[in-house]
Image (tube, rainbow, N blue to C red):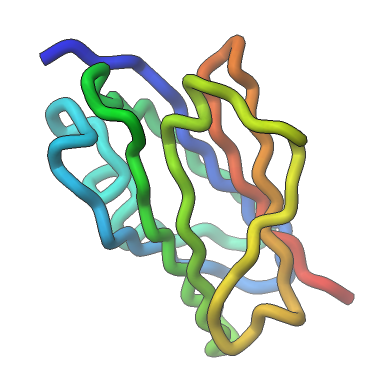
Length: 129
């Protein structure tokens, strides 16, 4: 299958450890095993750490939506949806604050940055102090 190589990165700049899980993914949108529900499933990041993986989006798909859930060590649960095709197509404006659902949405912020030239979609979790 034809695909576009993209990068997905997550940076934990919060004061809590975070475990990432991925859901609501359509297999048609991805090529092979380079996909978030494989690469980002049950990944733990301590404060200040980051994680990045190659993700192959299907060249024939129009989008590649993902739900990323974050379980913080203090019991906070957050989730947000994003389109990995943003890495390929770009977004405006970049960076932008992503709306989050969960029990800690007012204490934490997720910021998306896209570098279209490097086909990279990155998300940073910040603690609002």
